[in-house]
Length: 160
Image (tube, rainbow, N blue to C red; front, side):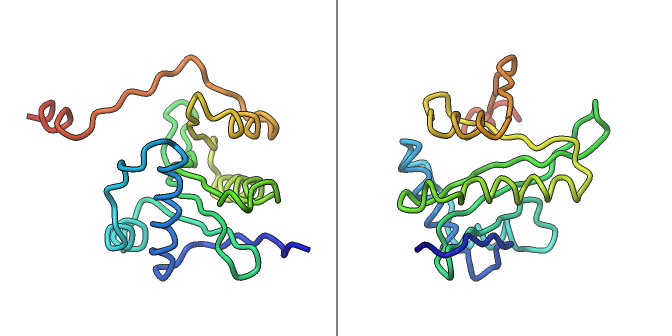
């Protein structure tokens, strides 16, 4: 019999676990070499004073089985903050036990308790299990939007 799923705010002592999950997520998303962060960067960006991103840990008993990273954005049209889910990951052996849904419900409640007008995220177009899951909870795709990004050298060149 499996133990109950517990969601809690991440602590600085979770930095190594968060890095592990980030690495597993990158492998799942077919970008194993894309992870450039390390434990110190996670400590600096998620747990320092004035941090703008936050993390939660999902546990089964005492065992970390997943995580999420989120931050607050702003909707000019709503005149309210939104909660933006940057990453959600559940270890393969723990999928199907309600952990992903528990993480999403936890964040939805966090959005409501902070008077957010939206809870949103992006999903890779090939990630059918995630798309099916998001559809099953009533989320609606925003197909009219295309994400643009400047990063690395392109960001540096443009900023000149």
